[in-house]
Length: 462
Image (tube, rainbow, N blue to C red):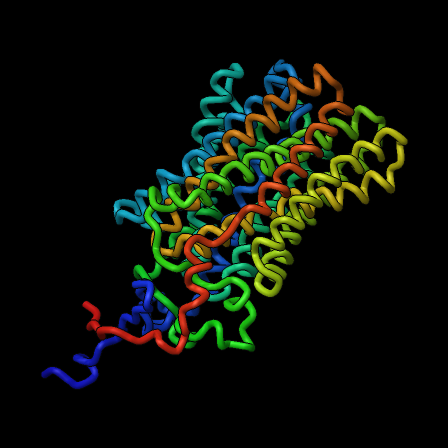
């Protein structure tokens, strides 16, 4: 027997005057079997697990070079290739997800296995070429699949207030590495490096796999039932939507490229991520060359990672109130200026100032990542966010090579002074370019009277 409740539509589709469709009426609990907060907490834990590969690598560099008889440049090229694949896999992973070929769970579980294998390869590789293949290619691919899935799934479940949530999840990618920074600084040596790396590989694989098992994307066009998407400009108590209005329509990747805004974001992120990777890779070696003690060396990177991560959450929250573009410009400018501060503190051999500017550098060098992760769906919509953000984030493969591999070459040629000055200038250039960003179609949409927006057809769910 069919009851009235079973025939009642569980959602309705609301269309605005621009033709954008919002699917409303379904609660997150109906779709997930639990609160949508799960799609914040689980990605956050997975991001903390994979952060070890990037943010703790600088602390392990000296032992890895000694154990494998690699040069410092060889070791940092291993990280550089890891960064290339970690960033480069974001778009193909997103494309497979948006086409329904790969689920969020499938992407994360595959990434967990590959990321774990990367550490085993780093432990047992007989030469730098195999280390690059195992850790750089396989490990980077796995970490990228996890990263891209975890970052953009949050924006899909929180389309009305994505800044703070995305920043919180993104922050796990930095401060999750802090315990391992101290392990690699104090308890990692040529006599135990294989055992430590094996345990790290198991830790990453198991933790990411457990979190990934429960990840699930919402339906296309989904919007939380408690928020009216057509009345955002009248929501005086909701500054997140008034400062960061929804995208005018859902943009396919090629459409997003044609607006000119996606390529501009890409180039801004090339510069900003290059400076960030440079700081992650060379702050510890710079501190050691200056002659600072191991506590300051480890603390400078630990502080940088903690502030890098917490700064992402804070700026995400601020961007919900101040505006995404304005916050992005601010944090990238801070990133650029802080490079001059780190160099100055090192030149005068001041440990307190070095730690202080490590604090500032850590804040600026990570806070821009959630800004781009939130700007992409703000500008181009949620339906193709995995692909669109994958395109923007792919710029990190260029920035990673510049910041790590090319950075090592610059340090060798110009010294740390020349390298830090160049990094500071590139950070400020990224801030200047960000001034040109604008939401596609929004100027014309300002003249649309919100009251004229109207609901369209109601559709029964399958």
